[in-house]
Amino acid sequence: MISRAREWPLFLRIFALMLLMVLLVQTLNFALVLLMPLPTPRVQPLARVAAALRSGTDPSGMLKISVRTDEPHQSQAARDRRLADRMATALSLPAGSIRVESQVPTPFGIAGPFERARTRELPPFLRESAGDDLIFGAFTVSAKLDHGRWRSVEPVASGFEPWRWRALLWLIVAIVVAAPFAWFLARRLVRPIRLFASAAERLGRDPRATPLPLAGPPELAEAAVAFNEMQARLNNYVEGRTTMIGAIAHDLRTPLMRLTMRLEHIAPEIRAAAEADIEEMDQRITAAMAFVRDTTQPARRQALDLRSLAESVTDDFADRGAPVTLEPGEAIVMEGDAPGLKALLANLIGNAVNYGGGARVRCDIEGAATIMEVIDSGPGMEADDLARAFEPFFRAERSRDRKTGGIGLGLASVRAVARAHGGEATLAKRPEGGMIARVTFPR
Image 1 (spheres, rainbow, N blue to C red):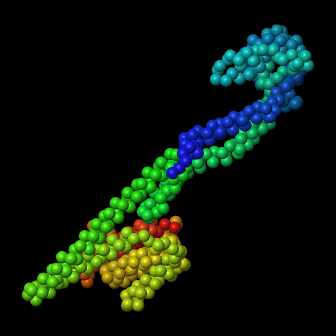
Image 2: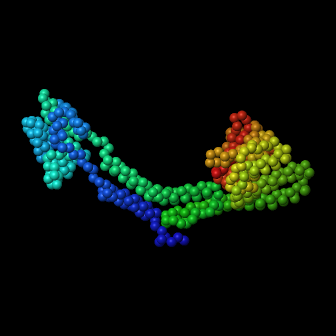
Image 3: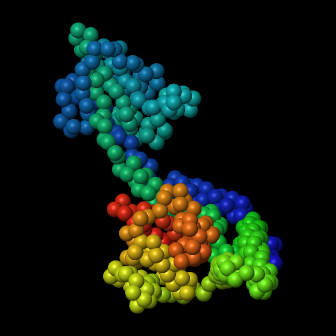
């Protein structure tokens, strides 16, 4: 059992990691406030602005000059009005012909503290050092010309200023620092999902796979217990059905033996036909028991060369005179049950030889899958028969003659072996005639 007292619930772990991320980001923001130098305000001497208004040019290139016909707005800030009066005196213009406005943005149209910051006076140390001889930040100073026109001077936009570059660099640093923690959080969140996805995929390949470990947070441990119980119930259900089929097949042999003994007292012509039927029934029972045994016993997986295994099976058919060939290629190593794979390939080749007159075998790697194909040039199968070909005891050949049709468990066994390896088996008609049996294994 798990010591639940030593394990944090999963939701607490997620909450703690998210809280840690928030604290980390806020710490970086606080460090930005403490360490990042304040942006240097743009400062222009009042004399330079007056000269630009007088001449209409600015040799320094720091001021932008324009002519407008609409009357500019006059700021009501005390300092802006004083600057307007000083500018009018410097230019020998009448009062009211100069407009000064310090353009401090008001976010979202909200005044309040932003408006008060714009209208208040300079700090004492700036008033003492510069007084009204300097103008700071963004501004517009306009002088009235003739015919109702106004000449306006404002600072040239400096684009992406250095302090903005520093702020952007700090943001990048914050992202780089927070990224490993975010990556760690994401991995911790998806780990239980990946664990259960892997367990479900493993259960599909091998119902007798090792149960999930009962470790981790309480929620994960409880889910692992439920998953393991589900796996056990599925195995018990399948084993119960196969055991019942095997028991029925075994018990049928007793009445068949009694029937064989009673045939000694009937006419010879009737006895021969009855003995043939009893022999066929016995062969069917034997095949059914072998099918149940092969699909329920645990397979022993080992590394093997699929091409070498296919070569040994094709050579056996070729030695018996069957027209079977294997396409050349590189070695293909995979984990598998060698006897089961040999039986799978032998069933497919046997069907191709019996119904298609020969077989061509191909082993290859396509993307993330290993494939094995058995191709023939026979008459093929009807579409309805293809849909039922892998059902136990189904035979496309309707004569029920063992010499031409078999028992009907060959393809069912093929699919069972393929799925036990996590793969799939399919049949399809070839456009040029014949059939192609394809078995796909994951790598």
